[in-house]
Image (cartoon, rainbow, N blue to C red; front, side):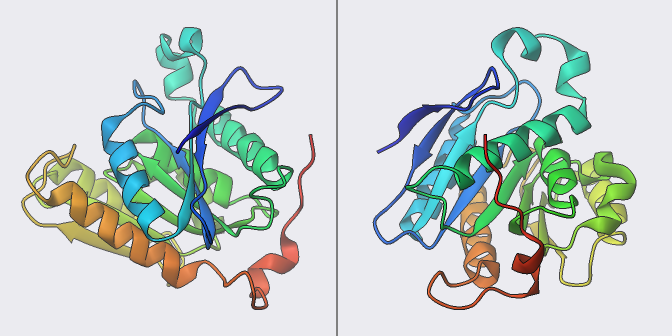
Length: 225
């Protein structure tokens, strides 16, 4: 069951779901013109929860901000908001011990990668769904977390953007194509394939809570608000 949360001091809200025995927390960054109520992201989140992954769906912009194009495409602002939401999660007792991953769609994917490029980022893995990772610019080369770029085979323009972005990411990152899918993955079974691939990626790269964390954790900053 999702729990509505407010993330101070930001003018944004989120929905937090933590299944019993959660193995990690995936924070969602939606695309421009979307929200935490996106049916596509809610579907993916529900499937990740079945994999024992907690999910935090957040609105990176307030309602008023989201009406302005300048805010929607301000990737640095969106990335900073995502980092502040991450700080909130790391200060919240119910989830603060869970390793973190990011799931971004459209422009939200660029924000997720830019946030993951921060030296103190706690993100262990990033998944992009039909994203625009190229909008993260030169920060792509600074991302240490493995990134999975999921693109529909019929989404030709975005596929080209992702191919160029992959060349700037670390060697653990991958571009995987979902056959028969267009940009929104509206074709039968394609969004389920996205959820399946995303779950596998997070379970593969998020460290076990009971085990020791890898080198990435040594530079993790525990944020406080």
